[in-house]
Length: 193
Image 1 (cartoon, rainbow, N blue to C red):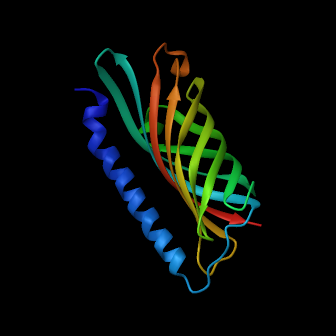
Image 2: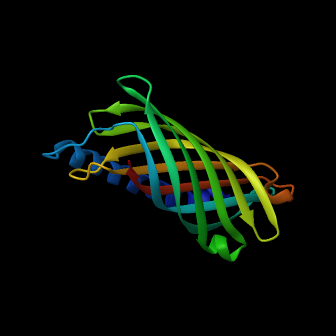
């Protein structure tokens, strides 16, 4: 059985839970009696995510492991029109759990994103990342991509929440001759100046 068959249910549940939480957050933000605006600006963030990584080393069989990443970062968002925004972020994560047990230490990400404003408090869009993974005795670089939902937190004009899914692709991971793929679902809490 392949990795995708074994973990399809876990990934579907994680994505489903993330989408439900994001939808509920949008409803709460939209119905807030004192809504904030999705304004441009810069700031810092703290975040946590669940990450699943897999390598295809044995033909039809993939090896996989899961873990948690906790980290922080810096970001800037800018409006490019009344309804569209772009953003950049630099993030660092420390790895915990089974991924850490296998030697993954941390991840540095440079992220670009673009989104459409939905109402006055929510942005829905996509991101593209360059990622650098550092493990015991080796490093590797790869690309990530996926959707995000960003929303202002009611009655807290400087706080922003973001749900993000990232699919990572790493060719010749850690110089091993095999490719690796990651799936990551995370929540980011941001303070914008």
